[in-house]
Amino acid sequence: MYDYLIVGAGLFGAIFAYEAKQRGKKCLVIDKRNHIGGNVYTKEVEGIQVHEYGAHIFHTNNKRIWDYVNQFAEFNRYTNSPIANYKGEIYNLPFNMNTFNKLWGVTSPEEAKQKIEEQRKAANITEPSNLEEQAISLVGTDIYQKLIKGYTEKQWGRPANELPAFIIKRLPVRFTYDNNYFNDRFQGIPVGGYTQIFEKLLDGIDVKLKTDFFKEREELEALANKIVFTGMIDQFYDYQFGVLNYRSLKFETKVLNDTDNFQGNAVVNYTDSETAYTRMIEHKHFEFGKQEKTVITKEYPMEWEQGLEPYYPINDEENNTVYKQYKDLADQEAKVIFGGRLANYKYYDMHQVIGEALATVEREFGK
Ligand code: FDA
Image (cartoon, rainbow, N blue to C red; front, side, top):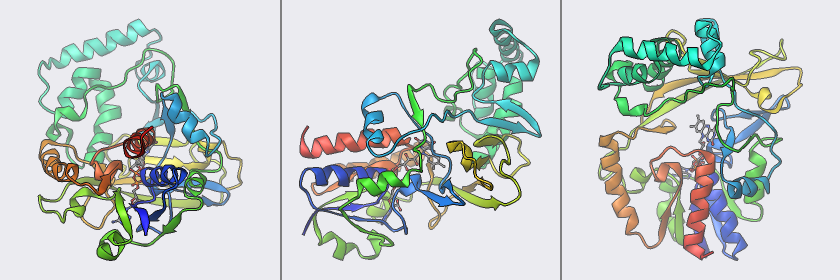
């Protein structure tokens, strides 16, 4: 008999299993995929670590979380500085003095602020009623038209003037020549990929891959005293209050044999509406790779339907209300712990999942 059956070998499940084992507990970890690591999984192709489920850049402000992951891998000095490609025009992201200089020829922060202010005033939006108005009221028309509109419409599959304003609460605008996307103290990519972290976390723990909890629920539940569940919460409760909605993605990965450097940057965002994908990743640049070949991945946003991979929760009022009903049931469970992005129906970055997993461990076992 196991102490815990852990459903999901992603970040939440693997950390819980590791910490439980340290405390003498016996765990069985299952995952329906054929690999460990969840969406953080990386796979070696042509000597390059390929981020199978989209670009994963580790960043955090929390020293405890940074020290925690550094136990399992050495992190490099990668700093995320994505490039925007708008119909062949190249701009730096996040919006900063390099972007403003390229857009308007301005060289001082004062001039850039004035330009944005002029455009905000000219648009004359007092109470933004949709995403388009919200974005223009925050950063003006030029940035909106070239760098936000097309990208956002592709991401959500709807025109920006039909999307709710709340999706964009604020837009990071920086009046320095600084292309670092994140503001956090710590940032990097594990040298040799993310999967090694999961191999170490799950070392000495029973792991069963290609095992879907819902296909053998009764047999699996009988194996352990408690369950840690990191799958979809609506499925756990048999969709009794309805299906929670997501946006999905399709990844198209190619090895390029005739070039060692295709786009000169790890992440390029395509911000026009004609290009069907939102991003192109060139994986070797996450690790400053010098291999002869290169591997690229195009990322296409998609409508989600059951059977597709649920990537981004749609946290609008309707879905949040349905989630709340599931959460009320979950709160009453004595033998099931829910954790991670799918069970909490919440977008989490990696450092946030680690924080949540460690807090759950403390609640379960004490400090
Ligand atoms: P995760 O989804 O990783 O793990 C859950 C596991 O449970 C999966 O392996 C799944 O197969 C398994 N499972 C589900 N149902 C099951 C069932 N019924 N039976 C058995 N197994 C089941 N974060 C960041 O910090 N920096 C970044 O750059 C990015 N980039 C990024 C890009 C994209 C495209 C996405 C979608 C996400 C990111 N993230 C990110 C977020 C990151 O991926 C996320 O924080 C973690 O993967 C969450 O870990 P979890 O363990 O919660 O879920």
